[in-house]
Length: 373
Image (cartoon, rainbow, N blue to C red; front, side):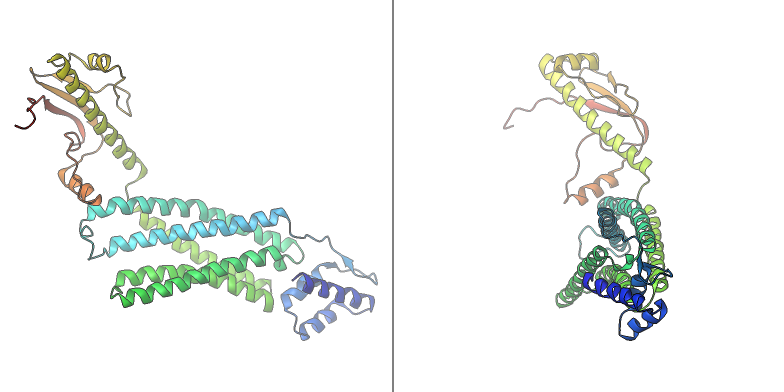
């Protein structure tokens, strides 16, 4: 590219000295087979002057700024399309669960893992797609304002590197398709996921490959048209995917309430163990949680949202009550589903099943059974 640019500019300098006009020189170059975009960039590198010599415009060679913009743009594009693929994959998992998966029929167990992946995909798209659009706009503005901007060596190298990775992904996609077909697993669920990868890859490959082709054979107008069409399609698909994802997981406030309740469950279990330890030491229940904290030489946990201590009340010689306020309900079905998501583990803590609102757990110190009986 640098040699071609040098040949073009040297020819234009000689043509100007010979009194040949810009339009005539451009026509001669195009007739000789030079791409119109390169001819246009070379002519724009010189000012339109009445002097008998070519007057060069300020030349902007590849700079660290240009390298930064292109690296940032392509990096943001990679993360954004991976996030989009993650969202679409999980939406397919929800719509068409794997019939061979033992827990696929359990909607609640499946959703725990799917929701986490949906949130990860949404966060990638929401952050990196706008960043990519902004940097891509800055690159387009830089190319319009600089002579030969479309022929940037940095841009062409990084673009073709992106095309290489995209083409490689599409080839792997085709190999997976053949592999699933040979294993007899080519159902609609697998086909949809393969189509997602192929569609995203074709969008990236099509945009940049056609854009480079337009630069070499057409003008800047074609490049802008292809760029705007591909970006518009990417934004539309991403927006639809993000909206669909939000409809399939709890909002941030609800998730925060669930995390707070999980902290309350763990805190009550910790307090329960401390009370039992106190009873084993003194053969009686403590009058208050302060006595337990003094005995354990620790600071007992408090409510994660209000900071207030948990409720404790002695109701008998060996019975007591632990109380708190939960923000969400947790039923036996929820526990079974959560256990299925972790390979069948079922949570047995006395505090994991509860309604929403104020709730007390009636606890009892059991008689110690001697070992072997």
